[in-house]
View (cartoon, helix red, strand yellow):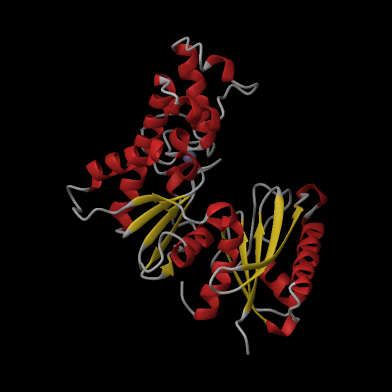
Length: 323
Ligand SMILES: [Zn+2]
């Protein structure tokens, strides 16, 4: 017997990625197709099954020798029933994706939402290697979070644990996409930062920033980071304020979960020290008095393959009986 082969599936609103890989996170084969959610759940599920079979065949693995299929689902998964829903795929509500895929591929399935799956990947393959208690956060279109506590994913009663993007950091503050006000996501997500930057550019008549405002009234984060690195004071200030908001959110998370480390993906990876220095500074100022042990807040080490590694990590953890 050689090393076990795992399959991984990363299902998002725009694309479906399938991989064959090994428990240590090595990707052997990969294939990607568009999700085309508008065609309805049945077509999406059959496209997923075709893609997984294609990857399995191209990796020259028989159905029987696939140890586990890991599924990182871009939307809520009810841990009591395994049912999946996604706001980004039309009609994708209460789908028993795990059973559908398990039956079609004759493989055991380990399925979770993408934030929890990302946390397991960071725990097994990334900045959390060798630790027992870590938090993983995304800082993209939304701010999501996953918690690994004592080596296991902490899901909560309804699968909603780790919803750090919607903790309130400013009472009656900026409007959030969830319909409430003052959430962390309204201050530190990509779209929030981009909108705040455009507001700042207009208020300060910043002739460097104003030409960068796009048709939806935002300054793209990449441009903002570029200008900040070139010394534009408004660009720097906007990023520092977003980092401070993130620092408060992370400090709240640390006070509740008591992790050894917090890894942040997406924008924190791209912006690096433009954000992370200030996030660490503000967070420590807010938790340090209570909990003096420093918890490194670092960029995710998962890179561009994060979605695939998240899916493989679920499969690997299932195989080892961990996480
Ligand atoms: Zn919110």
